[in-house]
Image 1 (tube, protein in one colour):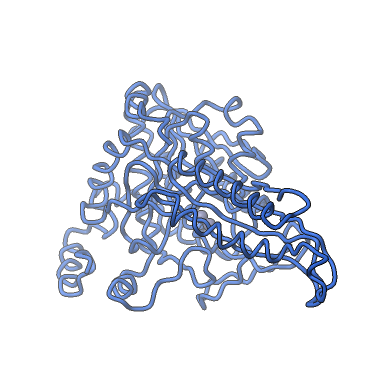
Image 2 (cartoon, rainbow, N blue to C red):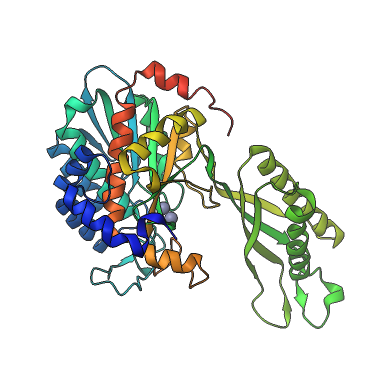
Length: 454
Ligand SMILES: [Zn+2]
Ligand SMILES: [Zn+2]
């Protein structure tokens, strides 16, 4: 049971909190007051964003809403950086440049949460197919936190100095938006950040908490498309053919031995074959078969080992069957793991504890999901990525005790508990930014000198 939500003490704490007039989401009274001052507006913004999701690289209305608000706060805003991306800058004297990122995009998922503010949006995907859209990854919470944070920072310029850079990144879900922004001159057109931060909401923590940690936070992801070539013919005469379906089936089983037999136990590695596509009719042996894989790892050397093993096994299985040519292996989507500089974690963990209360900051476990925030890190920008609890605390406790599992991100049922997730997101971001924007650029460079290990 989580101490903060212990039903026995909840009542007492409420009375105490009311007496002290300190809202539950932040321990730092000034910070709590700052968050409270923007909260009603940010809650309304959240509901609006939730009901108007847009798919990757189609976030035009979303980006425009954010840009308008940032401009009215006094930020210098550039739109269409990486198609629909935005970069907003506020200079406030000498000091470091610190970047905060939010994602803008939603997913082609039909919302089934039953919430009064559930998305009913239908739209077209890139292939022209009509699909539903939903903020099933919580990027709407990220955006509302981001604007709440921007508002507080713009109204309290006496609490920080340096350059605040707010980045609205498109197309995180297709892990292509950060790359697009960088391809379109993100590094050369704008001041290079000394540190970049981002958060992500999920049900792996109860709402009201944040999770931090040093080292790997999310995984390397590699998407592979493998085309296996055979020789087609009549299903009744397999001896005249080379059956690519049988090669594909053997390949799938071989691939499952990479993690179990070749990777050292204890290392994190996943090889999943998500689809096999071949054939049209039961009595026709097709010419080729296609496998779709996702590979997840943390360490670069394990990633290299697995990708090499996949290639070796696919080629060997095709050769064993006498295939007319070697399989084609395409790596069509990939991203690096996100990595928290240990020095930054040592500095910012206590900052979050001071802002929110020690009981509300957990050392988070790295997860095997992936994201392209690491593209910014790969440009030599040290980064700090942390988790924001989104789960209903009671349901979270029940799930921990063996009850029904909570829906994961991307589920049609995923819905973070807005309050206190949003309060906590704003409080955490403001606390981290104020801390970093009171350091010197040199101090931050020293904290990040371990970079390069991912
Ligand atoms: Zn997602
Ligand atoms: Zn996400």
